[in-house]
Length: 267
Image (tube, rainbow, N blue to C red; front, side, top):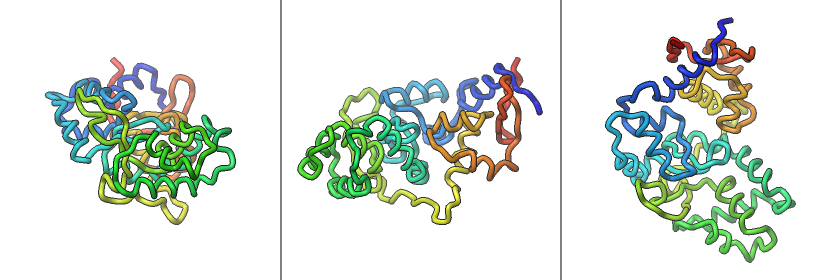
């Protein structure tokens, strides 16, 4: 099996990330290709896209946010990402269990014994009117029903895990400041989140593997999990293994990749 050294892997990643040379891509297509962009700091995607695209105009990304073609929301690893509307609709349900577990990892004691499905329904009912709300406002609306948990624990569980929401502009616009205000994702986009596959198959997981490799490969299964935080993806890798090519890295790990993806000469 071919061994790819660190230099070869670095060049491949730079190529996939559009960082060897600026690309002639529309902003929306670049965000989709990158499988979303880290956006904890609201201005980070602008710098990231300027680094990757020729003639990047920050207004183009702001227009996509106000036009609801891209959204800011919690997703990979429970961090805020900028993702396309199509991707968040397709991917959100696949991340539900991971998001719950990540919040419980921080607030398990505060949320012990709570019926999370019931809490999710209560949160959705409050948000159903379409009014943008801060975390504090949502927690206050539920305070009489859920007086025991610390407000931060309750708010994080609701908005980072249980209730699919989008963070509304002006949050995330170019050179704009605005607090985090949330609306139901389905209300913001005018369409529901895709439900999980009913038959136990994992088409979303398999699609995530392909998309991740296109943007970050070649990579090991552990790299994939480190990126998205999802368990169960080795099964998705196994399901599409015949589509992939394999390598080893200098540590002996098995790496997967798409056959036609760029792997520039390390020199």
